Structure formats: C-alpha cells, structure tokens
Image (cartoon, rainbow, N blue to C red; front, side, top):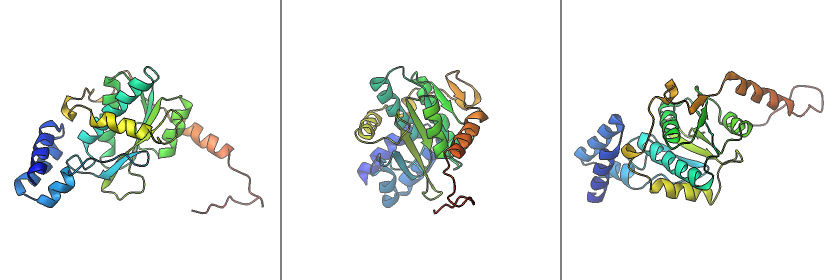
Length: 232
C-alpha cells in the first residue's frame, strides 16, 4: 500500500482536475487499500483501438489527466512518424465526461502543432471515421466507451486509413504516452471548443448530411422489393 500511496501523491500533484484530485485525496486519507490499488495499481493499457475504463481518479481510471497524457503520446507519435500531415478528426459521445475529455484532447493536439477538425456535439463513432476519410486526416480520435457501462469512458484512435489502429502502432503510441510529461506540464490550449485556437475548426452539418447520403447510396436493393431487413 505504501507504493500506491506514493504513486497517488505524485498523481495528485500533477492532476489538473480538482475533482479527481479531491477523490484521490479521500482514498489516501481514508486508507482504503483496495480502492487505492484499483486507482493506482497500474495504467490503462491500449486494447482495441485505444483505452477504456471506469471514470475516476488515478492512473488506472479514465480521467482528464489520462486523456491529456494519452493525447500527448498520440501527438508525439504523429509528429515523429508523419510531421505536418494533419489534421486529426475528433468526435465524442454523450457520456457526461466526454465533452471535457474531447476539449482536453483537442487542446493538447493544437498546442503540439497539429490542427483538428471536430464535431461540436455528440456523434456516432462511424461518422468520425467517415469524416477522417473525407478530409484525409492523419488520424482520428473518438471519446467513447462504445458498449461499456455508463460509468465508463474511452479513447479510440483511428489511423491514417480511418481504420482502428493495430500493432505495432498501438504499442508505439502507448510508449509515447508512458513517456509523456505529468499532465499538468503537458502543453494545452484551454477553451478550444469556444474558439480559443484557429487550428481547431468544427465540422458543419454538411458532413453528417453527406454521410447519410453516401450510406443510403450503397444500401443494397431488397431482393423482393420490400423494406430492407436487418439482423442485429
């Protein structure tokens, strides 16, 4: 438990979010060994397309500090592998923490010199991948935990081909994230969703309209001339 307390103290000192700082402080002061182990026993690992987990304080949860450091890793990877290739397409879902996570991610990317095109309101994940293809994005990010429970959130990454990242790209981004500065030292532009940076530009409604148009255009005709049947 001593190791977890030391890790928690370091995390508290570097966490830019007062809410998760206070949450982690309560765990330390309360001496809850199990809760501390869950929060600080490790880091969220890159899995299918990115990371996901329960929203909360600490390195083992989804929170602003984790999003900031993960985005710093993504930015470092993109600037190393394909410098100047931007932009990044970004979207988020309707979970309570998603808009703030999206703003932090955009702020880190533009501070790293990477322009961002983003959806200002919650959108479905396929629309972000579609938009990435349309604008020839160097990568895409979707803040979502997909089908996970509502207390979770996630950070999905798509590559230059607008498909989910695969090895070894996931490992390279993870390594860059592990090497990132503490969250409160990562360069970040605040209030990007309110127009604080000209390098962060929202998509207009035409992107979603074009998506629906293109989707309908490739719908196969029904063999019997009736409504399209879908098995889910």
